[in-house]
Image 1 (cartoon, rainbow, N blue to C red):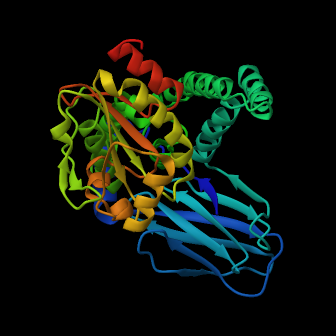
Image 2: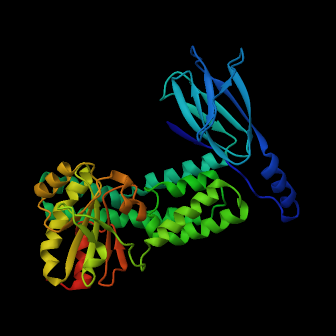
Image 3: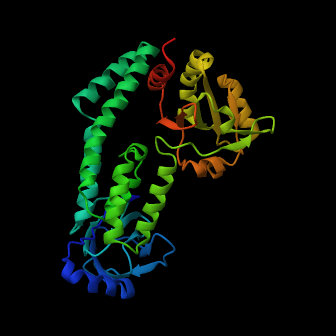
Length: 376
């Protein structure tokens, strides 16, 4: 489904903003969506708020144009479905929207006018695409293909590490750009995209953005949700003591994360069904055997659904460290406590249980362990 953005421009003077906001919070406001369908089909055009909305019909005029007035009490995402052939999402706030769509297939053309936030969203996505295609990134990718053909595992890992460092540097340009933006639906959803920024490393950006939302959108659900996100991230921020995990091991005995105090511990969220997790496991195995005699331990939390899958993957991958799971997939209590919505995900703790690094993979994990435990 294509994502289409519209904007909410809150650039009103302090002298007149209070009355306008007060009226909108009680009565809401109207927004007009106009459009044209180039290739009308048999069936209906429906528009519906994405969260618990009731579908409403859109009537197409004889000249294939339409106009629909929506009444909002806060900005929202609306889905429009053209005849079951083409569907798209619109972020709707105060700005009127003009659409031109094909209407005959999901890959059909879509043109948006009068939407500054659509431009913002597209600009940031373009920045991310550019970050992945710089000369440095292209060289790394070319070298990686050569190393992969030669099955040079050492060079493959070094190039993976170089790729991530280069990408992180480029992503900081996106962070700097987002820091300058005012509250909008586009900004809210850009901050949710895990590919654009590393939330764990940019708590400052999220906190500063939340402050802006509280001032401009104090009573909107997006501000509450952003506040919940920031609170969860702060719980597992660098420097914080990691929340307790107490789950059954394969023998059914409850094992606490805190029982490993005194060691450097890698909390590793993984699962049998997770391809990237399984590909990363050999790196963790290597690091474990290299540093286990210097006070390093791995505490693996499986998000599998069945014990059979869990135990099979442990055996197949040679994972000879501490394992726990409640076999509840992403409903695991540990996944909730650590705000886990994708795996692999790892957190490195010091001897006191404080978080010192996150998502160290391959060479990066080895280098960090050498830093804190010394070279072997």
